[in-house]
Length: 348
Ligand code: NAD
Ligand code: ZN
Image (cartoon, rainbow, N blue to C red; front, side, top):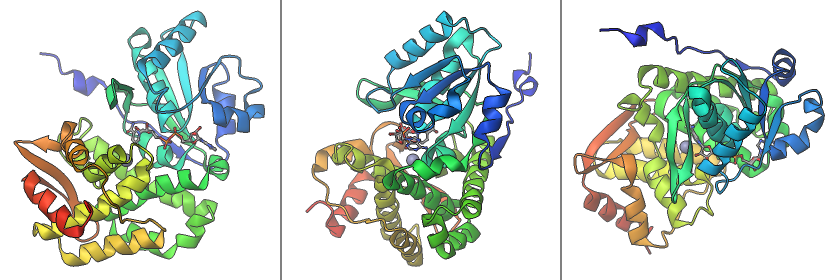
């Protein structure tokens, strides 16, 4: 019997610093770079001295196995070997695709995440989930592959579109509601600084999110328990994305999902009523509209039940009861949820 787990050290540093991309380019100038095409065109001069680069057009359509194969072929043509590193620069799509390619090339090479969207800084770059969409299923194939390091350069946020920034803020709010009352207060009192992307405040905000994500992943890498807390707002949120045919962005759908799931929690007697007020308060402050009319009830219900959200014949919801007190409720009857949602008028 060989205990493999002990031999492997999964810990890795997360560096949060404005301008740290310069250090990355200097330290790893011989490495292989996978770069989001928008980031490349905005920051082209950064990459003048980088020889080995693959410019990737990030979109959900391009988040596919064929893109991974192209990257693998490029790595081979450029003679990457087992000790080569892949530096992945971009949002969550580029990070997921690049991480997946790194996990496959010669059975896995090291990769470094340089997230450039708020969502990827606070969520996807930490935790080691990689993958692509497959046959109309989101993130259906992939692997768990932790990066060697994560470099978060907050300067990239200056060029990010407002709705992309807000998209990430929904996940930020999620961490506060699930894990951290003090952070919730921080978000309430720093709304303007965060909106203006004041660096010190944004760095603190990102740090808190990464810390919570890392704590959760450390305890439950493969999502059998506490990692499910990160799904708060995502069961109904995902169904809203599907129902809107993805015209509503992930974060905006998660914001509505956090509101509706909390409401369901209150009606089921699992969540206190003031929790709903806390949720509404922060979502309103950050300008999220959490009202929604479902277009196709059957499609919505099917999407809500998809993949990991059903266990032992019941729906699983990750909820918070008051701020910072996440909990997982299993075995919820789908009919009950539908009845509660019906009462709110979302189906009319
Ligand atoms: P994205 O990668 O599509 O980036 C959003 C847009 O911003 C793109 O158009 C991109 O070109 C542009 N962009 C990136 N950086 C920029 C910058 N600095 N300035 C200007 N424009 C910039 O989307 P995202 O929201 O970052 O990530 C979403 C993806 O992440 C989804 O595919 C989702 O499945 C995945 N995800 C993965 C995990 C995980 O744990 N692996 C977690 C959450 C989400
Ligand atoms: Zn999410």
